[in-house]
Image (cartoon, rainbow, N blue to C red; front, top):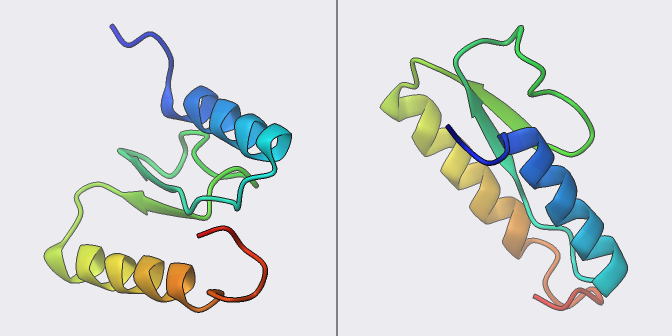
Length: 77
């Protein structure tokens, strides 16, 4: 049994980022069902199972582009 679910963990990460004034991390939820509460402002994207290689590759490309496009704009990463 996990100590906390992904949503709670993500909320703690977001709280830490805000308090420490860290740049927002990209967080992608992976869930078995869209009906699960994996959507919300704390997640940047949501993937559902089963996950195809094509979809995973596309998401990794998006994350890479998302995290490198704002370099030099005042972020710390």
